[in-house]
Length: 270
Length: 201
Image (cartoon, rainbow over all chains, first blue to last red; front, side, top):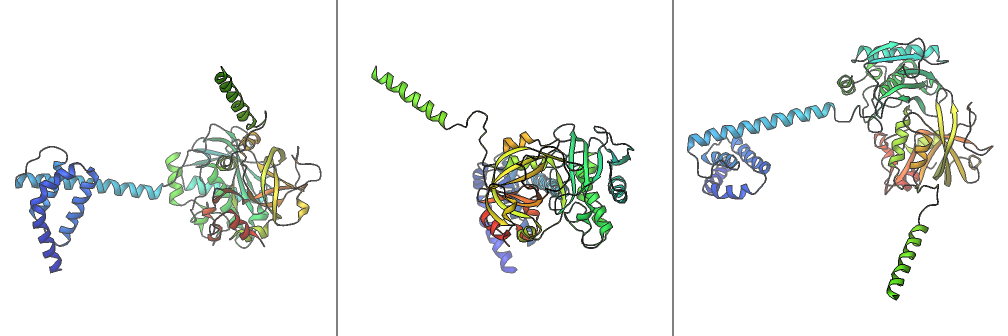
């Protein structure tokens, strides 16, 4: 450690007389690179608890690059400039940090329509109905998707329509023999525009869903999955809620609801 | 004067040459890039589907697996609670798995769901010219209405959700599903031919 401190002190001494000369070179570089250089050096100095005039020169150099003055500063001016630059750096870091945090919540597109996102519902009131012949045994699962997964846990409000009105009811629930390996299907039947759907069909295939164990939970999961498509969710690489494809790994409720990422998308749209 | 005639002749020759290279009236040159066609597939419908761990496992669950190219797109059947379909007429180049009885005169007939987002015309205008790998379920016996888009007696198939994969340059791209979100064995094949080999029983 002592050797490192001595080395940095030696470099700082060598570095100080060259400070102004290097500023001219810096002025031709990008501002971002200058700030990063200053920040990197500051980190080195701080790591060994060393503060010197060379640091102020460095930070002063960053201020000079804005073109306010070219002669050497007084010590008081240098300290003030240093505070300004440090404040700027801290603000930049805070902003970039908050952006990174936001990215992790909403890194993918939403509500821009297919194929890069799903069809969006036409309002936060999401109406649904039972289509002709919809299996009564599946109604509990559809009710779970509309009433619990969407209404209870998100800003969507579900509303049951006794009759299905094409062009008015948002989701018409159906069941059918779908192609092998297909547990549920969502399709927009009447669109408002390129990203918004007015009337959609959700079709479940219990024969495909009821394989393995946890049939009831699996059916609610697929109902939640297709209801999620009806408000704009797509698959992506999310495996921690009902938007995952296929069988659920266990009976936990998280596989019949939407995770924070998907809930954020829904609530920020409706 | 000779030079003038020579220039006119050259120009006429070039016009004829370019004209001969164009498709006939009513025909549309098929794009090589499947991206637009894939986009229409994804606008049409979204699925929850069984996760098959590998191309081989998906092939085991399919009635027929073929490699082919789309030759035509026609209006297809309407199946209650599922929707109206477009029928792809596919020239088969290779049967990967299944009986040749599913192939009629070198072709298979594959129905895709249409909806407010995708029509038969849009599928027809964007159908790619390249190869695709089809993992198919035999849907001939499903009650349906309307024209099949296939000759009498031909079997009608539907692709399984992750089971329509287009060759795209040196790689491949899933039709309904992003194959990079599939289990690991789906993204191991380096190219389309490796994927076909991985699907073989």
